[in-house]
Image (cartoon, rainbow, N blue to C red; front, side):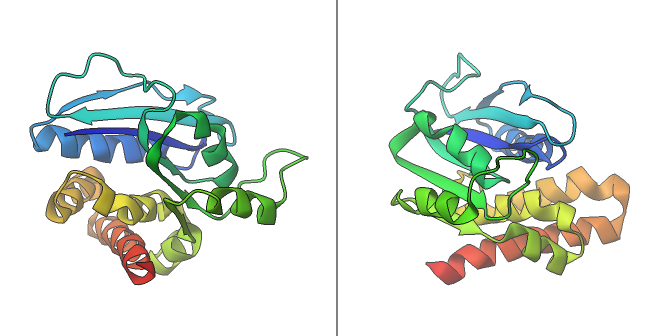
Length: 193
């Protein structure tokens, strides 16, 4: 088993949190895992990406070669398209449809969506709306984990446990909000399939 995942977005969207959930789930499953440091500007609004490599055999590099990513998971649609050269032919593109317009010449949203829809294995999620439904728009990153949960080599119960453990220091209300966000993301995809 091998999963090479690129996570992208902009600073402040929770790329590190997504990486932490995947890394912890991999370790608790007994898999080998390597994660690159988050590359890009860590300030709010700067482009950010991380590579997460999970396997049942040793992983020697933390960077995914071009054409080898199984999944590009993005919390921002334009950032998803930056990493297309890394996707292998059968890989999945999964993104929140809501843009983070941090540049004056942000591309046309309809054109962005059309570009993503050209790929047979794509999923477009309104993660921001689902996160608001769960209780806070900032949980869009957890919605996105739910939206790819069936593409990951982890049991659903493990992912929920890792999310709960990650947020437990913030209290029961925040834990439940994030678990709800995860379920809403998962359900949004299962309804489309």
